[in-house]
Image (cartoon, rainbow, N blue to C red; front, side):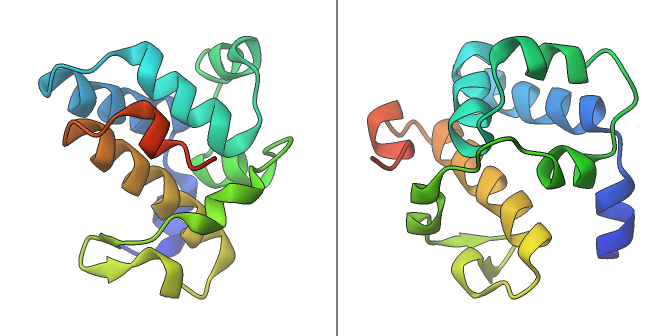
Length: 116
């Protein structure tokens, strides 16, 4: 799938897929929301509002109010690619989120997922 197609995907659809992935592994929507808030700086209210209106996935990240500085500590492989080596900044942001949700689904503790 091309980057442009990923950026144009509906945010609510992707969000629901990520929540479903976490729930299948015994985790909660609240934990997924905490990851979204930590990574992007959105409030819970803003996050919920974005789920009710058409929002492109790329725009969700482009408009993030306060991307967490510690997101740069996220390392590892997602879809066979090392997230820290992704050159395109917007795609790197998207893959950071993928990596964090993967860690959640694998049972990692929240204090380890949210790099402090």
